[in-house]
Image (cartoon, rainbow, N blue to C red; front, top):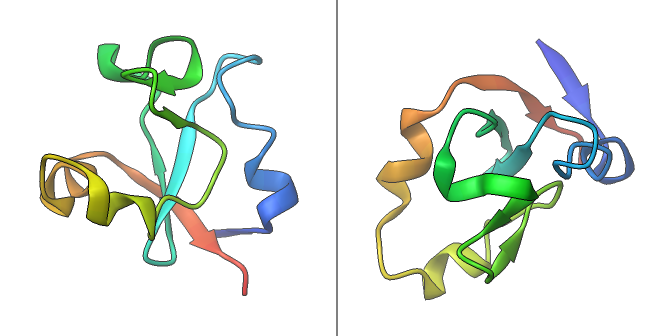
Length: 76
């Protein structure tokens, strides 16, 4: 499985077709989700980033992220 740096992850911001986010060390492909259209989730969160800390502020639990395919891990 590929290991992404934060810089590499930032390339998957929806501008080039793919939309990835990181959560708790895992990198998820949310490209197929209409909720991440254009790389932004509900106008609140940008893709291509580690959302581990901001997930605590979400109105939903982290289980929704875990429904998406894991494409790699986040390099520490």
